[in-house]
Each structure stands twice: as structure tokens, then as C-alpha cells.
Amino acid sequence: MMSYKIKLCSIPSFYGLLILLMFSSCSDDDSTTPTVESENKTTGFVSVGVTSSGNSVVKYFEELPTGTVDLSDGTDFISFFPTSVYDGAIFTRRTDGSPGISKIAVNAEGEFIEEGTIPLSGAASTVAVRDSLIGVCNDFANPDAITVFNPTTFEVTGSIDMSAGSVPDGAQQESLRFMFRGDDMFIPIRNVNGSFFMDFVVHQANLATNTFVGDTRREGDGSISIEFQNGSFGQRLTDAAGNLYIPDAGNIEDGGIAHINKVPVGSNEIDPTYIFQPALTLNPQNFLGLIFRDFTFLEGGKAIARVNSETPEAVLIILAASGGNPTPEQLAEIQSIIFEAETGVWCEIDVDAMTVIPIAGIPNFSLLQGAGGNVFEYNGDAYIPAFNAEEDAYYQWNPTTGTVSKAFVVTGVNSPRFFNLANDI
Image (cartoon, rainbow, N blue to C red; front, side):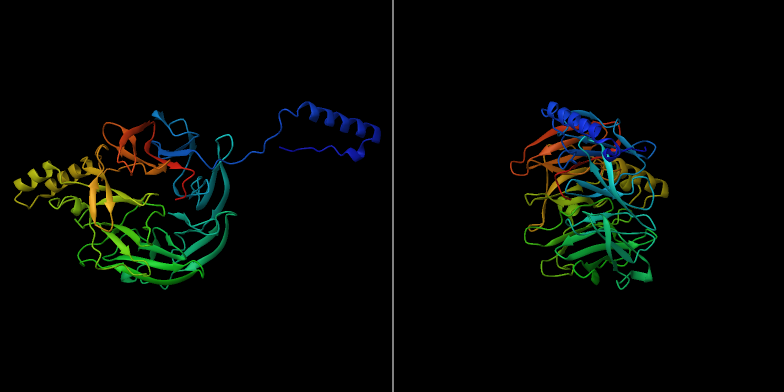
């Protein structure tokens, strides 16, 4: 819209003075309702869900939701996949589906506004923010480089060449997640074609110099690949002492056991003597689906994760009937049962004692079908999703007292996630 400005110098001085007096008078009359500058929200809650057509629906809440919440009337985006929140801003892939990343804020009216974009040559799968000066993202069109940007100005400030990193089989690497520990950044990789390696490979860069530093790995047995835990995000992976814990997903299809890998403080290498397999620890008799997901440390220092608790009885019956050698049809049935079985439980994880304790009061869910949701914190409590055949609900858990209660139920979208704008992740 074109705007026009009146130039008082072009008006005879008498009329110019009269107009100024009139504006002055109006200003005195309106002094009881001063103009307040619009400011973006830095508190409140944002939900992100997926519609049946695959688009995203995003909604802002001034207060923590209660009761049953319909998310279908939020704001529609082609894509909205946050992987970092910092200082009230949400960092995500470009919301119009084009290559690049976006910085999204919530304005004073509760509306989502795009404060800036960084175009890329190809799609970006993840973006992470360390502080007000440093953020990073990947670019599928240039997989050997990591883009560095300033989260405040949202301008590109540099690039890190990762081509010197060791990549198995001479493959081209893809950065899957960015984990910060001071100036050190750890980056699990896979083949850019989407496949994983026989070893779990983690590259390292230095953010003070924007240079590649080295790599470390958890060696596999050479028979199956080791997958990364796709979908995980955030920076809650270090304990109070500064030890870094990097989860892998094992190998769901071939029975590989998922691990928590430890990079001790003062070291850049995965500790080969630290062997922690949460699903097997929880149930040593469980021999299928030995996986866990969404490992994270809470603000108070406790760690939690979703853990698969058992092999479904129906699977055991099929295996017994087949004599341990199931047919292709039986294998397909086994996979279907495991996929839908609600054997996932939220657990408290002690990384020092290597214990896994279920959190009582939170219902089971299917860990393979798509557990949905994500943990967020508010006023010292953790809000934990448990989505199952009955309902999609978030539960309030106090890590100190252990008390659990249902916080709210969500409807209207698939896989709804919630973010507390006041939490940097």
C-alpha cells in the first residue's frame, strides 16, 4: 500500500501552526491511553501438529493448556519443523517449503511472524542455536559444509568445512544433529543417501575457529548398521560435570541394541568402556525392539527417555509355533504386532548408576508406531506426552516428588508437539 506524508513546509505558516496546535490538542486529550510499542512474546506455549494432508498447524497459548485442547484452528504452514528455540524465537526449516531456514517469532497479538530467512541451495534437516551469537544448520546440497549464522541478526557469518572427516566406505556425509559443549560441536553422520554405517560415527568441529577437529565412533559388530535417533533435538545432553551423552538407535529391523554413548568431560572420544543399553537394562528378557528414544536431561539434572519394555506375547507365540524360524508371512505379522504394540514406557535414566526406572502413572504407548509429542518444562515440572489408542495426552511429572497427573488432552491434529517459549532448547 502506498503511503503519503504531508509536508508542513509547503503549507502557509499560519495553517501550519494551526495544524500543529490541533495535533498537540489531540495528544493532550489522548494522554490517558498512551501508545505501547509492540513486542514479541518470550513466554507462552506453541503447539505444532500435522494435518491429514501433511501440512503443519501451529497455535500459540498465553497460558499452559488445560482440559481438552483442539489444535485444528491454528495457523497453517506448508512446513513447520522446529529443531531449536532460543530467546523466544523458533528456528525451523523454511515454512513455505523452499530450501533454507526461518526464524519465527510470536508478536504481541499472538500471531506468527517470520523475522528472517536464510536461503540455502538445498533442504536443511536441522538447525541448532548455541547462544545469541552462534547457530548452525546443514544444507543437503552442500553436505560437507556446515553453515554458521548469528541467531540475533539472522545473518550468515561463516562456514565449517567438514570434508576432512572420516566417512565409512567413501560415502558422502550428512550431518544429523548438532550438539554443543562449550566451543566443541559434535555431529553424528550418516550417508547422504539416507543409509547408515556399520559404526556409529560422530564428527567434531570447533566453533571458535570454525574448523573441523576430528571424529570418534562406536564400533559395531560388522553385521548390521547403527542408526541415529532421528527426530531427537535440543541441547539437554550433558550432565552437571560436563560429560556428553549421545544416543543412537541401534538397528530396529535387525535387532541391534540402542546405546547411550558417553564422551567424558575433557575428552573428545566416545568411551568404549561405557556400555549402557537402556531397553535391555529395563528388561533383560526382552529380545526384540531393544530401543529407546528422546533421551534428554531436565533442568534439574535428571534424565528421562521413552524405552521399549517388552516383547509382545503374540510375537512369542508366533516364534514358538515356527520353531524359531518364522516364514516371511510370519515375519510380516511379527513386525506389524511390534509396530502397534503399546510397550513403550517413560523412564527415569541414571547415567552414572546405569539404571532405568519407569515413571509410574504415565500410560504405555507404541514406541515404534510414532510416539508423538515432545517433553517440555514449566515451573519445575516436566510435561510428558503419552499418545496411545485411547487419547493423545500430556502428563505433568514433578521430578522431585515423583507425582504424576494428566495435564491436558490434545485433538485436531496428528503428532502434536509443544514448546515453552521460555525454554532454550
